[in-house]
Length: 492
Image 1 (tube, helix red, strand yellow):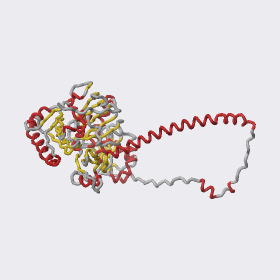
Image 2 (image 1 turned 45 degrees about the horizontal axis):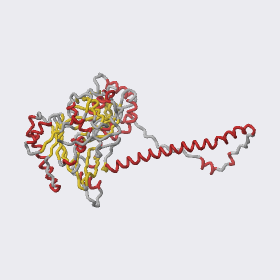
Image 3 (image 1 turned 120 degrees about the vertical axis):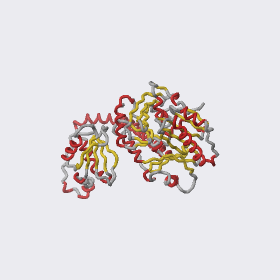
Image 4 (image 1 turned 180 degrees about the vertical axis):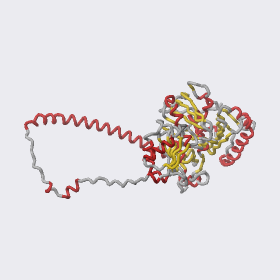
């Protein structure tokens, strides 16, 4: 029988665990501050076809609208505002590097290592690394613009994004390191996610989208897993590793176990539902990724923070710096508060008799009237010393609204909305050249897409549109695009 790790205890009890697939967005509210976590609430929303493809976000503007409307629809039921957002394997890249005490710094060595391994440039990447065991460093990386875009979803909905957590990392918290090395398999919505773990580090991850049913895909599944075992562990011969352990989670885990047991692998299925209690136990098997994520969101290697930027950063140093700074501020504030209270109390006690005496004698003392001093007798040097020059404000750039070519699209089913918005913007001085319908009529909020070179007008344009609509910024346009700005009008 598998010995799972006990889930950790947290001061913040409840979180919303949000995951997505090609088929749906799924949310689960889980109280993780218990020895046996409790599932409070679950719900899902079917995604329109093409929004997510092969577990990867294909249409971010529509994805953002779907997530926002889903959260707002359930706002009263969720009972918390803290969100852990799960990143699918396709959005994150896992690597392991052996760093010695050479002259090259860790960031430089990691940059060189990743330069030929990522499908985007290192300048576009957000990279986190952490030394797990001696010389062995775990690395996760993704596009920093993706992290920024995902974080922007929650800015106007009243929810707090706690972390963006790569889903495969949860297996590191779920299983004990004594059973390493192992291959982890997660099944949900006709998709299989894999993670190979060596020395507390995911050295490889992959996914497999099934076109046919699981029963009809036996040869494909077995071939995929055998190739992983043979190829990946051939790279770890020097560590004398022999992969025999495979752990499977999902509603069809037993089928996978049968397939792999025939290949001389030691396969165990994990009934994750036994690790939880629930107010409503119906259909929980469809929320396996959410439950799985709840075991690993606190992993040190997650992407955490309100703003994400490109760069290579060591997790432990960042965490230490954040904790020390926050602790320093809190301690300093407490001591300053205590000092001010003591000082004020002592000052009042010391001066109260003197102030009473002054009040008694003030009526008998004639006020001393001084002659006004002529301003001519005051030296100009002294005046100059006392005068504080106001700061010089930089000149405000003049924006010509006619310089921007704008297209307005109707993102709702309301006829004539794009034309009405064009008339409104034209009356405000903007140059709207084209109107039409958006690819879909699902937009709740009005979305502004723009070229980076034309960003100067966004503040004024957003303020203008806000007179009528709830406005958010969408994807950036290519500099070769016909329009400088595209406005998709929503229902609000």
